[in-house]
Length: 141
Image (cartoon, rainbow, N blue to C red):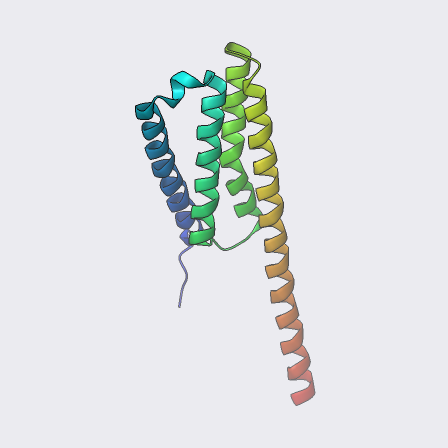
């Protein structure tokens, strides 16, 4: 059976859409409650971004894309975009955005390390199965 080439990327895209929907609902609810008027702008945005990245992680764990090094880079790109946005806001608005950028950067790097380790584990497991099969063929022949 032929596996579609884009299958793991579709799961990643679905995880991004799920996380964006959850973040949109949380942001709308917090603005309806008035949370954005109680906190400084960068702190409220940092809370929303933390919820976004937590929702992204939860959706990613739920979807379970096939681990590879390429997938690890793509998964880390989402927090990377948040870091870029926060750095832009720190230059144009306030230095407080740097705290949010640091949090998103740590989150993205940790997510990259986890996915890359999972990819190495899968690769070594596949290599181990291949070597066991070769040894079985040599003993049987």
